Each structure stands twice: as C-alpha cells, then as structure tokens.
Image: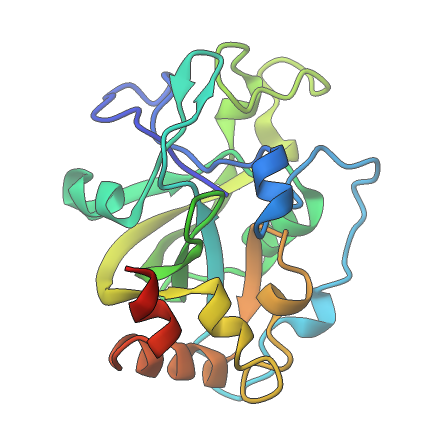
Length: 231
C-alpha cells in the first residue's frame, strides 16, 4: 500500500506522504501487499496482463493505508481524503519496494491513465475513489534516505534508480467505499480475472477497462444488504 501523514512537508528531500508497502500480520489476514523487498529484480509475471483493451486509456489499482501506523516514528497513513487535501490535489506515489510493481510504474503507467485508490491494511479494505497519473515514472529518491520509512539499505547512496514512483492527482471520491468483500461476490462474474481477487497482495496492479467501469457503477449503487447490516 502507500501513503502517510507527512502533511505539507515542502522539501523534496524530506519525507512526506508516501505509499505503505510493508507487509504486516494484520495485512496478511486482510488483503495484504506483496511489496516486500524481493530476491530478484527480474519479475514480469504481470506483463501479459498489461491492459488488453484496444483503447489507449489504461487503468490501474494502487493501494494505500488509510489508518495510522508508525514506521520509524512516522505515521504512514494516507487516505483518499489525504490526497484530496494535498496542494493541487497531487502527490508522489513513492515507497514501492517490489520489482513487479516497480516495473509497472516505470514501464507501463502513462500520463492520463486512471487508477482506483484502494484502502488497504484497515478494518474495511476496499476501493475509495479514482485518481489520475499526472507524471510518469521517475526515480524514487526516498529509497536512499535512511530516515525514510521505506529506505532500502541495499542500494548505493544517492542512487534511487532501482525504485521508481509516479505522481497522482485526485479525481473523485466514491459516494461509498466498494469493499473487498463486495468485490469478491463478483469473482465468478465480471471481476473473474481481476488481479486484486487473484493476487491481492500486490500493491500496484493492472485493471481492465471493463473492471474499472463495473466498479465505478457499483460505487453509484446502494451497498449490498450485507454491507448495510454491518453499519
């Protein structure tokens, strides 16, 4: 997942809100992420699932933690509301430390692509809204900062080129959260091939146009009865 409450930190060299990528016991029990530091750099298993739609518009799903969690004494919380509150509603999506997710951000994400904002590692994980990729992949300098929650001690000092990030812009918050449990009820239907429901722990994932449109439609409908009864 991503993000946190480094709110309004002006210096690009200082930590600020960023993607939460650490796997925790609670995350293992929920939906989880695969952004552990992997053994190999050459991971391309999602390359064949890079959106197959004929349209040039591509869609993605990016995870962030909406609830407070301290890493190195810093709160890594970042929700869709936090993104909306950022200057110009834009934020870097840094902290990705998984090669497969890195490759997607570096090689496949393009300016103008849309991404579902997924709340992860929380009481009710699910999709909270939509954001736009406004800057394509560039080196993630936070990997070289020993004070940063996602410092990678294995890379050479001042050499962030191993890890990449993109900039995202808030587009909209859904009128309601489309929960993971609700998405799972459509596993045998339109969401049968959705990466989230088959390889849920990866924090950066491709989404098909049909999946994106279907989820957007779900968000405009009343929640299922099971969701209502939980409130």
